[in-house]
Each structure stands twice: as structure tokens, then as C-alpha cells.
Length: 233
Image 1 (tube, rainbow, N blue to C red):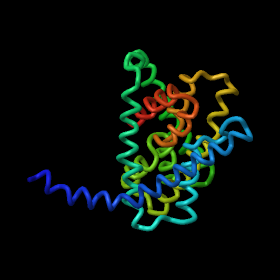
Image 2: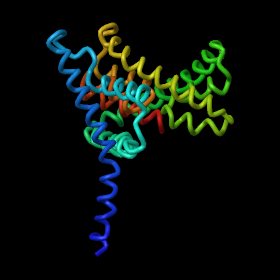
Image 3: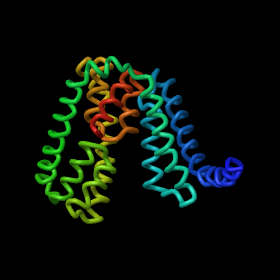
Image 4: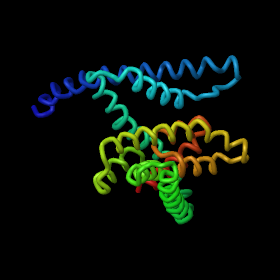
């Protein structure tokens, strides 16, 4: 009886998220098509579908903010579906390699986060930003983007305008890093493993980490995700 009684709620939830999921799927298909369209001209995709999907999402949000009917499905895709994808990615990780790299990885994360925090605040102040805004941007880039900004904002009594500015600037910086980071591979002759570590240490959010690394290789994506999740912890 209990199980049967849940079906109406499940149906309602499905109808609620369907428009947003359909919208997210449409952006995904467009990104895949644009990625494939590059290959006849360049023999490979200059901008991978993951990166294109991020750029398309940002463009749509800026030029045509989705109506309320789309928000539940978009939120479901950005949270539950993304978390499920990360779980699947984590299931394929080499646990022995994680244990072997444990202390070195932790040390690299601590140093990276510390340097990013200090440098972010200093550069922000030199650029003429307020101390609060500089702290928010530094925290967002050093740890986990919007979540870190939201957590720190009440502590430093940041204003709404400062929070919004920090989120916007962090997003722009994140996309810039995703687009430029792959150039380091040929510039410094990086292995997939080293590139994954660098991406995990520098890119601020999990979707951007995946966009910067999965097109390179599955190994780079796995390592980058591990490093990124360690930063969050």
C-alpha cells in the first residue's frame, strides 16, 4: 500500500523536473553537435562538448534567464545527476594509487588552497576591490566556488552586491581557466596524471574540472576529481 501511495508523488516530481531536464538535454545535444561540426575543419574538436555545454549554459542564463518552470529540472541535473556521475567516476578510481599519493596529495592541496587564498585577497586589494569582496573571490576560487562564497559571506558580513559580484567573477575566472588549461599539456609536455593534478588544484568547481579534463583522458578526469574533492574536504 505504501509503495503504491508513493506513485502520485513520483509522477508529480517527474512532471516537475521534465521541462528543465529537457532543456538541459537540448543544450547537451547542441554542444555535441557543435563539437562534431569542428572535426571536418580541424580534425579534432578545438572546444570539447563539455566546455561548449558550459559556455552555452552561461550564455543562455545571461541572455535568456530560464523561466521558473525550468528551474526544478535544471537544479536536479546540476545536483543529483551530477553527484551520481561523480559517484560513477569515483567507482572507477584506483584505490591503491589514492593511498600511495595520500600524504603528497594532501600536502599539495593544503599549499594550493593557502596560496590561492592569500594571493586572491592581495590581488583583489591591489585591483581596488573591497576586502570582503576580495575574500569572497579568493575563497570561491580556492575551495568550491558558490558554496564556499555562500558559507563565508555571513561570517564576514558581506553585502548582497558583493556576494553577487564574487559569484560572477569566480564563474568568469573559472571558465577562463577551463579554456586555457589544456594548453599547458603541450607547453610543458604534461602526462595525463600530472595534468589531472594541476586541473584539480586550480579549477574551482567539479563541472569545470570535468570539462577541463575528461576531453583529455578518463585518467586525467579521475585524478582531477579526486584532487578537487580533497580540496573541498
